[in-house]
Amino acid sequence: MDLDKFRAQNTTIELLVDAVKKTGNDSPDKVAETLHNTLEFQGNYERIRLNDKGDAVIPLIVTQYKLE
Image 1 (tube, rainbow, N blue to C red):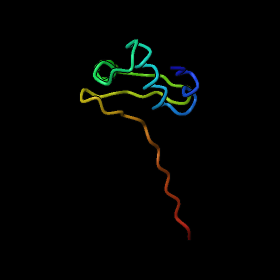
Image 2: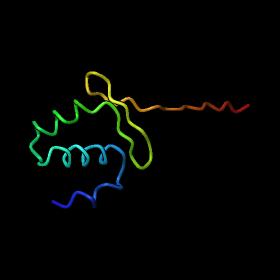
Image 3: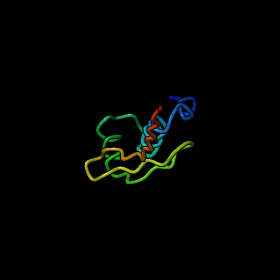
């Protein structure tokens, strides 16, 4: 499977592609184990940190503008 064509889509896809490559196959159980052991991933556009539950912690900045 040519995974590199998906690499530039977004950071989440990059993380998944990286996990499949590190695992060496696309077995869901093995990929999930690799993802659970990943604490941080630097993609092309942003860095993803994963908490102990495996949830992605992505910084988000919200700006509110008030019209007068």
